[in-house]
Every structure is written in structure tokens, then in C-alpha cells.
Image 1 (cartoon, rainbow over the protein chains, first blue to last red):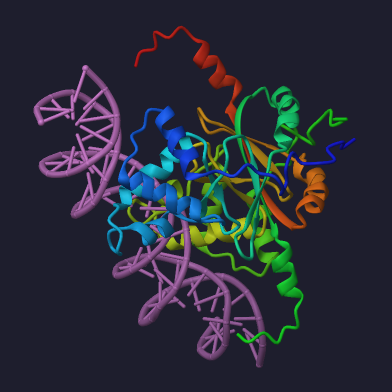
Image 2: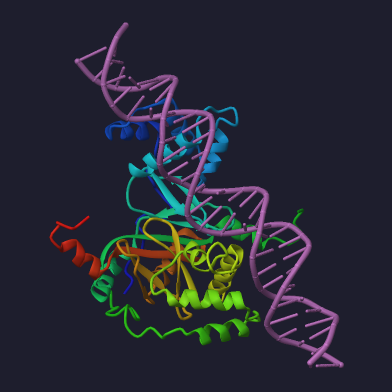
Length: 166
Length: 166
DNA sequence: CACTTACTGATACCAGGTGTCAACAATCCG
DNA sequence: CGGATTGTTGACACCTGGTATCAGTAAGTG
């Protein structure tokens, strides 16, 4: 068994999501393109690692140079998740974070060291669901799956002589 | 492929966890058996569905008849999870809840209607992990998996004539 | 350009949870 | 059994992450 020699796309060739992509998706869904939303989109896309909502608040919030309200940032993240260009994931410490992705069902493997997340499209629940539904008599509607581990570069830094400067 | 005709134990024959079990497990791990802890254990075991920490606070907290501090309740839940008799799971609405289980790796399928959770021991990540590790070069350490659906009895109530009294 | 309506930001609030610390009480030891 | 020791407790303050409200603002439309 276990014929899935590849995982859909574990690391390579994820289509890049641009600001233009996101903007047109928003318009297609009937959302207005406002200055605060554009700023949130731009900031979210700049992050290559998962980021927390409060990080965006720190970047863009009225407390700092920015002029975007906390509520607006949360609302915009919610919209981006609703149109499927943003994934909300749970980090190893249990706290939520967000990451921009092209639309489509995917899960993430998240590094407990640096937070880097790699998406994969293979979903083991799809094949488990029928058995599970039969055995439990539940109707299955959704699931939550995150994998936690250590990324290659954090593995390397751990292997270094422990005489680190800190 | 897909030879798992059963899921370990999806619904039947879960060994029952008693107060005595939990108490001896705690002692084995070097924890003291205090009056507040016994009360939390007893309250937690009384719940047959997942419960939130704040529910226990409502049941046992100093605000009500009880005399157990909020912090103590949270700390005790943490201990019970550490010795593996309590699972912290995430409900469909994203909020955490707790449920008592005999020790062992398991996941839950949680009803979005009534909150009922059914445990299963089959873990699809175990077989996925090697492929994932190879494809991403991550060291895999842990994972989070919850399945959401509707339990048989909530399916029934939805099927009833929609002239509900509410 | 004016108007409709979605959107914004300030503020207050909530849930869920953690840190601190003096008082307390399980257990150990003799 | 009677302390002493040390893990544990409860009150309290505080924190993160997020939501509700609502008057004011600005996108998009004709």
C-alpha cells in the first residue's frame, strides 16, 4: 500500500500569488478595493512565513505609523480566508497564524523552530473519511490537520557545535 | 491499497477511566492528591462530552458554591493532559475543549451540532509521515488532527419536520 | 457629481489563559 | 504523632486574540 510517491506538491512549483491576483479575486467576490484592504493584502503577501494578526496590527496599526484599525485588519484577514487566498493555521505552540496561498485545499507542515510552513496538497483524510463515516455513523464535513516538525535549516543549526554566541 | 477495514476502535470498547485510575496515575507521576485536584478530576470525568475549561470554572469556581480558583482549574487540566488522561481538542468553531480518555494516541471526530466526540486510534499521519519527511526534508515530530461532522442523532433531528417549536 | 451602501476606526468588551506571590496543606521524617 | 518541607492554592492583575457597536467616511454607480 501507500502508493502516493509524491504529495501533490510538497515544496516545489506553488503558483505565486500576486497583489493583482488577490485584488481581482476580491472584486470577483463583490468586495470593494479600499486603501486599508490593499495595505493589508500587500503586507500579508510580503510575509513569506506565517504571521499573526497582531504582527500585522503592529505593522499597520494606528498605534504605529500606519493608520489601519485593528478591527479592519482582523476583518480583512477574515475576508481573505473566506476567498481562499489565506490559510489560518495553528502553530506548534497552539497559537494561530496566517499564511497566503493560492486557492485550493492544502495542509501545512510547520517548523517549530522558525515557523516556516510548507504546504502540501495530499490530504490523508480524504481516503480515511469513508471508513470513518461508516464506523462512526457521522456525516463528515470538515477537518483540521497540521503537521509539526523541524525544517532542514533549523536541523542544521541544532547540529552546530553548541558553543553558540548567545 | 486502503486495507484499514477498522479504525482501531472507532466507537466500541474504550476502556473506562475511573477516578481511582486517574488518582494513581497522578501519584505515579509524583503529583500530590489535593482536594481541589480531586474535585477537578471528578468533575471532568462526569462530563461525557467535551467540556471547556470555563465550564469547569462555572461548576467549581469560587464565584459559585465551589471553592476552587480559576488558575487551579487550568493548572489541573494542564497536568491531566500532561499525564495523558485528558485530551485537548479543537471544536468546529475553533474553540478548545477537553475530554477525558484512557492514555494513548487518538484523534476525535467531533459533532458540530451537539459537541459529542468519538475517539479513533487509527492515525493517517503515521503512514504519511515518511513520505512527507522525504519530500520536505523536515523532521516530523507531532501533528494535530480533528475531524468535524454531524453525529447520528443530530442528523436525525435535522431530518425531522422543520416545524420545530423555536 | 451626487448618492447609496459597504466599509472604517475608536472603543469597549469578551474568552481563554498565564504570571505572581503570600498563605496553606500534603506528605515525609523522626 | 508533631513538625518541617515543599508542592500547591487562590486572588489578582495582566495578556493575547478576537468580536460587537456605531457614527463617520469613501468606493463604486448612474
